[in-house]
Amino acid sequence: MHLLLRTLLMLFTSSRRSALTIWDTSSLPLRVLPTDIDIAMHVNNGMYFSLMDLGRFDLMVRSGVWKRMRQRDWSPVAAGETIAFRKSLQLWQQYTIESRIIGLDAKAIYFEQRMVADGEIYARAYIATRLVSKGRPVSQEEILDEFGQPPADLELPEWIHEWREENALPGSRTPAPHLWGTKVQAKG
Image (cartoon, rainbow, N blue to C red; front, side, top):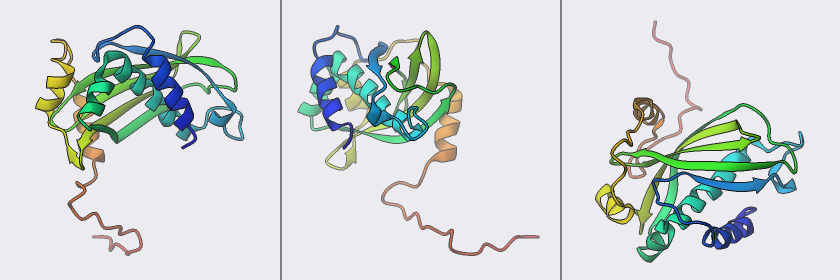
């Protein structure tokens, strides 16, 4: 909720920026605001993912995909995320969020996003996203019909497949009981 107004403003301003294709890289200039920081006076680690949502929206709006998704009643949802930090973004610092699609598979669209300041990467994240409509996933065929075919050289890195497989939770229709409270007997 804390980024709702900022997101609405970004959706408006992104529609007036130069057009991109969904396969291009978006560069969204921002400044660290007081609502972005924690007690250490730098961007809170959890806030990076929320800010990166703005970068993905910028790419979708500028490519025209956002409008077509809304017309088809598609909503984007994050399915998995990983991030690495290098430097801290400080209060009032200017930076950009660089966003690009690095590939897709039968289950997700994968983004690489970077927080960049003064020509240096401060943080980098990989996000697996899904498009859903009425609670069901949108098929890859439908996505490619709307997005167009990806560039021929767009190839998802092999480690992404391993990361998704190693970190995936069961599907929403499969039980996923919480067992931490149960003692596990060591085999030996």
